Image (cartoon, rainbow, N blue to C red; front, side):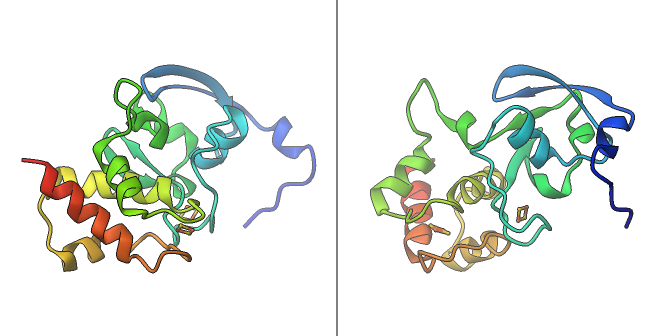
Length: 167
Ligand code: FES
Ligand code: FES
């Protein structure tokens, strides 16, 4: 892999991108190789998207891209052009927590919280296709999301609480 020298990135060709982030239009410029994670955090301070491993292992950086969960560390910023990006901040509904977020609060399923944005995003993608998973299926939904604090039990209970509340 080619390593950029200091200042080299600035001399590279920049690409203009435009997308919708949590319902608001974003226009920016980026080198073609910059990840969506870097763009979100470093260019527009969307720091609710977490930088964990940077290589597709932990799931902390998950966002919805046109409604589908992706690891933003493995997605180029240019791939977001013309599309809808949703972060955990975009899950609020009229200023209220999304019912899945509320279930996490009710079950105490958050400790340090670093994994939580990515877990919520990943779960919402799965749950929109499969709204009433078994406990084992919930575990499988979480296979790409690492949490070092909770032991997952309260997260699973939160998902079960949420799924009981939806039709
Ligand atoms: S930071 Fe993207 S999967 Fe870990
Ligand atoms: S709550 Fe700390 S990593 Fe999951």
